[in-house]
Length: 335
View 1 (cartoon, rainbow, N blue to C red):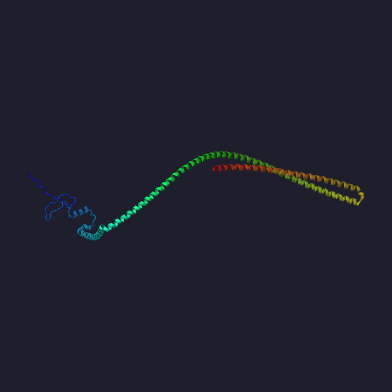
View 2: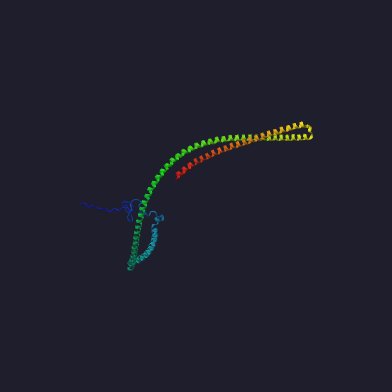
């Protein structure tokens, strides 16, 4: 029976390397790294620092790691010393607080404070309960009022619906009235056009009557001129009669022998007087005709003006009625 010999094979101490160490005999301590020349002490130290998260150190630290470690160690020692002092202070405070926790008087004071707070909370809870009960009563009263208001609102809604139906009926009636008013407006426009034509005809008639009046005035003027001429002739005849009378008187005074001539003169005087009487009658006739023509012209003008006034008043009344009808319809619609 054979016995298996187990040989202890050492591996390279470079991080991550599982190769066996270099077994080449030499002077000094045996090698702990493999045959890879890059696997040495300094490279292994850098690799371990990289694995430990210290790969960002300065190049001087990599060159002189012991000095760097001494410097960092002194800094950490100072920090630990400060932390120890702070720890001692905190420890004294902790001991004081623990004494307070273990003090029966402090416990009794806290129990009394808790009891007082509980009593206050109980009183506050009782007050809140009273307020809640009062609020509940008020809420019930408000609910009753709300129910009454809801019933009243329902009644108002019914009334409003009835009013709305009445308004809709009124609107339909007003719409019909508006259609009728539109038709009346059209008829009124037609009547206005007809009345306008009548006014134009009356205006033409008035113009004609005015022309006739002017002609009558010219006749009166002509008659007045004839009257003036007749008056002048009468005055001339009277002057001639007076002259004849004077001549007759002178003839009678001068000689009685001239009786024949005097008779002739007297005859001429009588003829002149007769002519004067005829002219006076003609003058009276002319004056009468002038007065008649003036009166007739005045009557015709008055009648024409009266007819024009009557027609204008009738037209204005009709226009006022036609203008008032749309306003009445609009007033009815607003009502």
